[in-house]
Image (cartoon, rainbow, N blue to C red; front, side, top):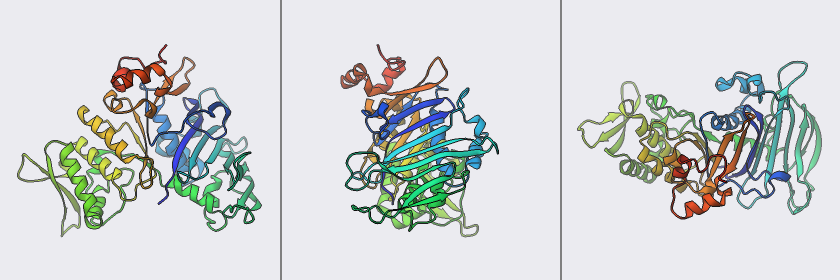
Amino acid sequence: MIVALIEGFKIQNYRSLRNVALGRIGTDPDLKDAEQLTPLTAVIGKNGVGKSTIFDVLGFLADCMETDIETACNARNRGGLDKLFTLGVTDPIGITIYYRESLNDRPITYEVYINKDEITQLPIVVSERLRQRRKGQSKGQPLSFLWLERGKGRAWTGTDSVEGDDLDQIEIELDPYKLAIVTLAEHIKEHPRITKFKQFIQSWYLSYFTPDAARTIPQAGIQKHLNLHGDNMGNVVQYLERNHPIIFKRILKDISEKIPGIGEILTYRDEVTNNLYLLFKDKGFVKPFTQQQMSDGTLKMFCYLLLLQDPEPAPFVCIEEPENGLYHKLLETLANEFRVHATGKINSPQVFITTHQPYFVDALSPDEVWILEKGDNGFSTIRRASDDPLIKNMVSEGLPLGSLWYSDYLEGGHK
């Protein structure tokens, strides 16, 4: 399993996000004093400010790892590259990720810029760069062990020893309509660091969960991890029940404590159809219910606990508006569950949330919350709640952050 921590990222010219950065972004002079993202990070804001857009940018990058740029631009109802550009801006879309492969490792910066090719009118990678300081290097510019412009550039092979003798520079020319890291990652021996970065992005969990998908009755058979839609929930339960019974019992105990009325949860395989059912025993009924009969909120909470208590969790978990369909008094419980598992330590996920629910925000601290707002020019800006000393003081005095937001203390910065 890859253990990594995103310390910051920047988005440029993607819909309303003209130039938005969260956390530390390498050597960017405008953000050199910014603190890194916390293991649990939440973005809040009104409707239409761009919370879903941040989620989509991360999904877009993940989709680019699986296919070419044009296909990613059209996936998930994005509508093509022209629909992704910030209105009135001709500069390329830019995505920067600043992360560490482990807590004590040297930070790595990945930058990609995408625009429309003037000749073919297709989405093209204008430039792509992956850089990191070499072992033993404490100052100076990081080494760009991948740097291309329109498919042409250079890459360094090897594993980067202290002396650096195993690093060789090679000139490369690749398909500019695909990310270079996708192509080069196929050559694991020559480009182990590029391969590791691609695997890191591919291991992200961006939730596209829907209760209807979770109600799907799958064929029996164990699966280790919950998929992005949650329609293999029963298969993951079967795997945990068989391979990690202690974790499975803990999840069932958590569910029964956190959702009133739910008692025992069992799995049942139909011998004729080989279909796998989850059986939820409600304390007020003799016969159990299947997942097809359970409420949206119960299914959501159950899937989130499965996801968080995965024995080999994804290093980066991104969930858009987890509060939808949940009883408001469960939101603080859910936020605390995210924090308990997002510890920033080995074998724990980094959790990134977008939300507009004050009850959820009540359970968060100012350094975990970023406020996204749209300016008069139509572009969004973002700032950390902890940047406002008054807000920090009010929270330290016992006032919940979500209540302050509901009372408009967080809007526009407090003067």
